[in-house]
Length: 472
Ligand code: HEM
Image 1 (cartoon, rainbow, N blue to C red):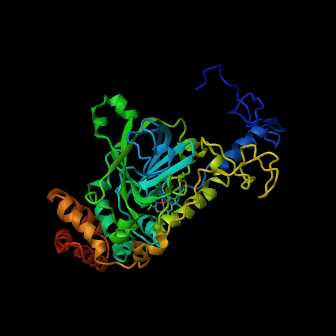
Image 2: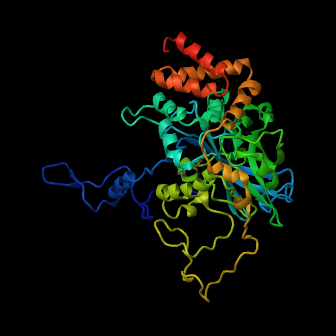
Image 3: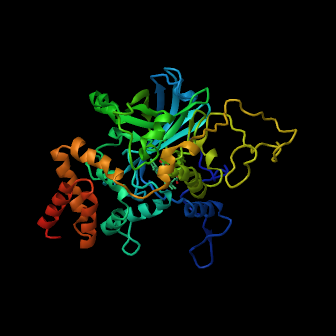
């Protein structure tokens, strides 16, 4: 760690001390020791200990992280102005974090749960984050439901234990989650390794070309199978993913129906094939978990020019939720912390001061807009993009009406009938029936009714299993 001579123990502000493991005891009358307020080491040590914990992430608290790089293998400069995606061979440093969703910081890695898949690209145009999941479809499409969804997957307020009754009580009342439940209770629900999971941006984003035209797009990471051929020592350090996109023309979007902006649904690959873009390699462990991973702040709102949001209400809500959570969890200046610091120059003099300012805080530069003394100029690259999709997009209007329709069961039906084989169908039913075993009978019946919308065979199979275990 130190390649020069070993450091001398000091207080936090550098004053050398003889022994960090002993308080200063003053001799008193009658023996024993008296500790006084002049023992700065003791006060500092106890006070800092009391402040060691920061709020853990309200979701996705348990994680592993690594550093690495992204390399463009297929130029897409005709699709996006984003510089980090253009020019074959171009490399961008990245920070990666893979999490479970429901558990606390100390919870198990082996649970059936959606994995979070976060990538921060440190680009020349500022940070770009993809804050995705390891399954392509999400449980809900109305953001106001997000806290309820997560509470129903976490611990019961009375028992402080995970509670299947809460879980199913939420889902049988929100049938749009059927598709995501098929992924969660399938083999994918318990990944074997941090290195072998897929990653999906899940939402529909927009790619904006240099001429300001746009297309809709989805982001995909797929683990490269070649890792299995490496020696065990290399495989322990290196993980590689191929990064691809799916692209949809705005005109196609208008006719495609609700799947365009609805994250309970996916874009079928047969209609929108994967376009390869690059490769992500993890090649470095963090040297300190708290500093580099716990303090990392990933947010869908971190976007570089050339990539933009779409009218998905879930994505719109996330634009607010993440920086808000991070200001609470890490403080107002969390963007200045090492894992979040951009490699691009920052000039945002109208955001300054606040707890934990660790830059020169713009020295004496004006802190009000419009001054003749402000040294900055306006960017030409940051296009002020305005597209008329909100007005004419049929899919947007369709999504405003959030009630469940037959379309919600079509993609899970594809999974059940065409993607799953017999073994996967049996595994899925075993996992769902196991989860339903201890919940009240009316919830079991409601869950069966929900899955019957996909295929009545499912209800029969789950019902059979529950009868075998004499619960229904
Ligand atoms: C973390 C909110 C939907 C993936 C978080 C955090 C919040 C949050 C507050 C903690 C952030 C922090 O403290 O740093 C929401 C809201 C959502 C939503 C309000 C919907 C309205 C989603 C969706 C996905 C997702 C759809 C996947 C596509 C993640 C991931 C993390 C996370 C991966 C962990 C980030 C990290 O590695 O630090 N979410 N979320 N969330 N969320 Fe969401």
